[in-house]
Length: 302
Image (cartoon, rainbow, N blue to C red; front, side, top):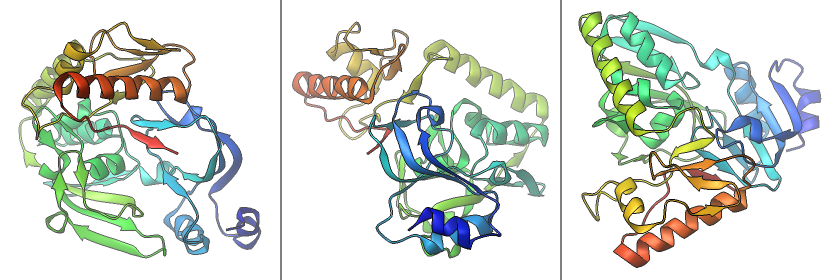
């Protein structure tokens, strides 16, 4: 697609298009080169118009909070899409059901549920991503996952067709779901249970304390680097890494967190190559010492 031609033809599109846009600003690692095109649709119609004019071979990547994304240092030869704040609204459908835009933060949904005395959303306070990313990965923590509260998802496909998909039609796995990779999530509905606000708040604070004790905060990281290898061992992945890899290993400014061995950190000015070397080193050492194959939880965008 000729993006400039799209701009000229689509006078009614209120979304913004940027060229040669820095990807460092869009992810928690603070790593990456530039994207050829960056599109921020303001409305659903903006997004539909854009998708209808995209060629099938056009590379698209939709980014949320960027909390688990690692971009290459090279130019991304495609379009990165980030939904505007208009896709981040949260509202009550009825006393037990919440509708949240896919761009809303998981934490924001948890806070909204608390204000409305709805339980089941407490764990979301501790997940640093957006609703769209949470559904895509079936994100979870403290024995709870997105699939446990999801009712349905609204999405748009590459042809610009809007779909509503009931949760019962989605196959969820550990940090995965079977929804088509080219679907862009727009919003979702969630079920909760009425509960006293004080009890919900107590549980949220309890989970926050657990997280703060176990995980580093306010650093340049992508969160959990690898998935727990639940089909190979009962051990947590951080335990396996800690036992298999020297904690002081470093490639450029890419290091392993002292607090949590599955959190890899950009200490200052790490490159994609630095972080990828660290990822490969850990994966290879774990394999040679334990026989366990580790799968990435973070997303590598190439």
